Image (spheres, helix red, strand yellow):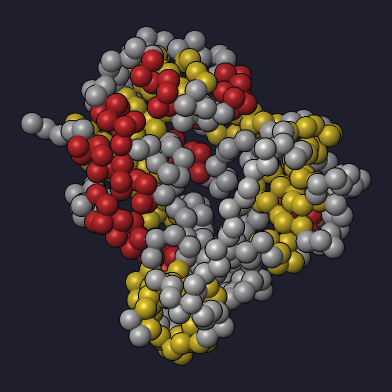
Length: 445
């Protein structure tokens, strides 16, 4: 039998791409780094704009029947006071989609992120900042830089490769490649590899990893279908791996892992697995979690979606040999790494499965502390309900998406938990992303 693929329906209505409208820019919106504007009653999501500005917006997506349009601000008629000239020559309408807010002062970026978090808490959790235990600020991380200088924080960069072998980054909501000769937010360890200065024939993407606290450098190549890997000669010693058409990882040269350093411990991260991208993020987030939970000797703890064991290791050292920590992670290689990383801690056990599948089967009916760092979609109602039934005295929720955080806070409230503190960290400068740590306690009866 032959599978019949459904036909893709073209958008109805006449296309409006390229149309220009003069608009007043409204508030920042969640996701995508855009602000909300209106033209003749229709909503426009406008990138490269700031609240309060008057701009000429050029439509990039949408038709006459679309519920909303996407657009770029291509002329700034009345600029906001937070607007600056973008330091990166590849930032702007129709260019690289990696950075959302190169045109905004660092303080202005944090203000926008704070507005997004405030709006999501109100909309999805019914909470004011005060009710969430949040002071309303998004905290800067790292040293203050001179005006106009961009923080080089990104220790992992995935470059796209054009058909001619030139390297660059994807344009916003596009497969098109913006050629670049340098990414300003790339960490020094990535820049020094010289990836942008050479050609990559037969390659679809190049991911560069520069470990923090060690000299390990890794490049992961994805060849185009049917193509062979080129001979790779970079500007410094580096491990090379490739990903095949079935998304399987293969060593070409050197190690399959990098060694990261955080919390006075070395962490093995294999096969390009998950690790916080900002070099100060692991210690920043662990510090916030430990400060909020205040683990005590002899307590039991859960570390859910535990990755390579970062929070589990920190908890294990605080609860001591009379306490116990169970970590749950679904990625098999991350579990192997976590067990390796925490092998000297006898009070830690790491299990491999989905949290929502394994947790009910563990037989655990109560615990003292819980840390969860779920994927961008959040933990969800069922998992939150299960966690709320374990009677933990405190729960730390680490979130990379404010909407998912707010939804899950509402679910926790249904289960009898409320946030007593919330901190937000600017761990992704120049983008709309940020990280949060919420501490929850049982609602007093």
